Image 1 (cartoon, rainbow, N blue to C red):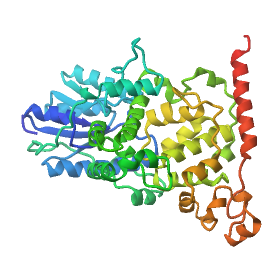
Image 2: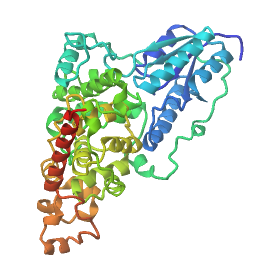
Image 3: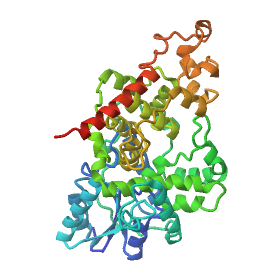
Length: 478
């Protein structure tokens, strides 16, 4: 390459060109910009097959966006520290710009990159990650980390005036006369090894353009009724922005400002704050990805059972609301949030299987596989061992949950079609339906649809007994 100075923008969990502070800072240097993505095993942004599929598609969209601005995406294979140092040496770059990713493995990788670049006289310039406030900047009056959501939300809301405005996309990106060598995106081998992506392709179009359209459509149509509709699995009442936020195709700042001041916005902004809360907790307790925040639950008497775990994964538990959620997940890489709560509660409190097993399956199959929201927050909240958690003795009844949040059975009929002919009165409890009605609906329990794995009342008593056993184990003298 000719003797010319460059800057590098290291794209990580920020696959967009609008509201991109790191890109904005690189452009401010006045030097040509080299956008780069490093496929790096030590920075596992994409723990499962579904999110790897999303990443590959999103990288293609990012490359298209960059080319429209006169640039392109350079793709290299990691480790990230060596790949970035090599690229900087090739092109004479003295600065690398990036955004933080607030996850333990990503932060470790970032430190290695910083040390390697510094050894070569290259600066790593870091901008805040895809949060509203950096972890550690929202504290209790005593200076500690928040453990309960409501005061966290209050602190965030009181500081909302400090949030920056979104940055406009660049008009053009100055580029080098000669480009360094790049891998093809397909060479990162992100495509799932089993051909299950047809449902993902039918359900989603990754990329920044889609994210912005989705945000615009949601704030104009569904936002006013969000608080009333967000728990209804039979309605299109959620934003469906979670994978776009996860991959940084849209920023939390963009999402916040798009909704702020709109009718019904506060309920949805609280959900953004729950996402924020999860990341702040993870920063304080990185071990929470695999260990319970409530240490008492280390002694919980989980009952490992491979057959029951498999039945849950495949949506064959015999409880239609649970099975509908699990089948939606497998087909589309996403599940309605209310359904996530129901299926998670069923795993840990009806089947007494460890929450870590459920969290691992979600990370494999979700396109929005987010460590903070999935492990530190969601699964631990349901299991009763997390911060601000649901009490363990709160055991969701999947029949009542179905009748409340899918009253006409539309959600079940879509994802459990073998029950489609059952009337709403029985669709959430087919085992109680009159035999003649089952025959008319072509439902043969144990053949076309499984009988329940467990009885709800008995499972609830077993869960409460296990909880008491755990408490006795913790209080027993050494």
